[in-house]
Length: 133
Image (cartoon, rainbow, N blue to C red; front, side, top):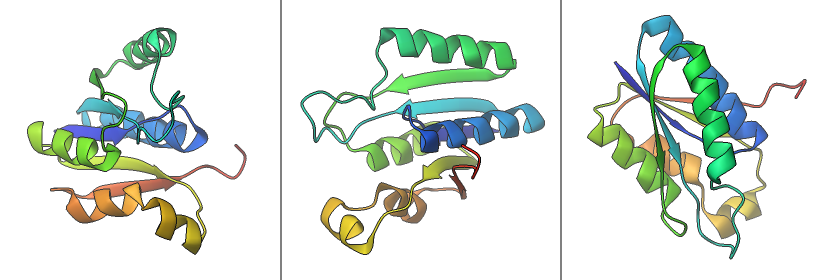
């Protein structure tokens, strides 16, 4: 089994990563971590820099799971990258983090999570940030 997780360094991304790691450990699955950005900013802190990449790699190695990290170029479509990774790796589960957005925010900015849920070729597990975050 393969699990794909959409990950950005944020509370929502951490919640999704934590859940996907525990699910991969429980099921013996391979984890594909997709780090991607909307590219709507000149400098985007959602993309992992070299230090963050190595920290994530060490963290996943310590968890004892089989994993792969995919970083997409700035300006690429995050939902498309997650769905494409799920297709390419024949994922049986996609995990994404959710954040609260206003109706206007969804209208103006679009909704990556909604697109992943509707377009993914497999079940999508959406997780919220724990209330004690």
